[in-house]
Amino acid sequence: MLPRVYLNFMRTGCLIACLILISSCGSKPALIQNLAKSDINMVGDSHIEQTNQLLKQLIYKLYKRNPRELQKNGAHTIAERTEQIFSDPDNLRFAELNNRESIDAMLLSFDDNFRGDRVFALGVGLRGMFHRAYNQNAELFLLDQLDAQKLYNCARNIEIVAWRLAHRRDANGELFLLTNSMDDPINLSFERLFGKLISLQDMMAKITAERTERTINKIVHRIATAVFLPVG
Image (tube, rainbow, N blue to C red):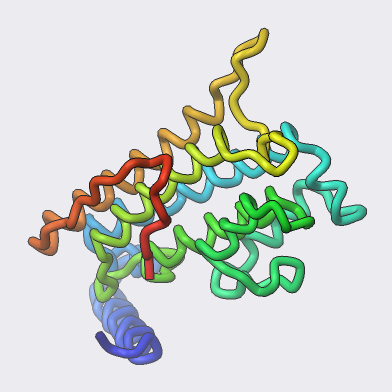
């Protein structure tokens, strides 16, 4: 695979070529970006956008359900925490998480020795994992290639996160983070959010596999004892 700097250079070249073509035809420059994208790129962009929106909803709901986590870091608001997670997906290292990223950051949420903000750790971890699953692309262009296995593994990891949130407990027997509730009123909104996130990644994995004519190695595991799968 070419280094990312060369891919970006080639991508820029494609955009310039499109600009020249459009200028010679008298078309609108606003169409340049779309000309540098295939249909699969646009589908991928839609999946990335929907995934980010669902993750923001998940972070908001986790903080509302677990307000003590936000209080662990002084005057931070949910909006400020969300901004930290989404402002720069290529730079998700935070001292309070011991500079852990992706899966390593998620693991802190279920570490009994961790005393920091578990919602933040989970949000940073999920954001980083999703970003890696899409080969660290905020949007997709003609020269970008996705890996169906990474997307499939990402979906399985979300299943593991959902299971751990519902079952993993600390030394005192308390859930590390509260999510769904079977009390009155019943709250299954977290389950629905995770279901949507899983479906998006599985769908994109399937589309990518068909596009690249590559077979996905489907992992069979017991979710209660499963470990997180690599996403790059």
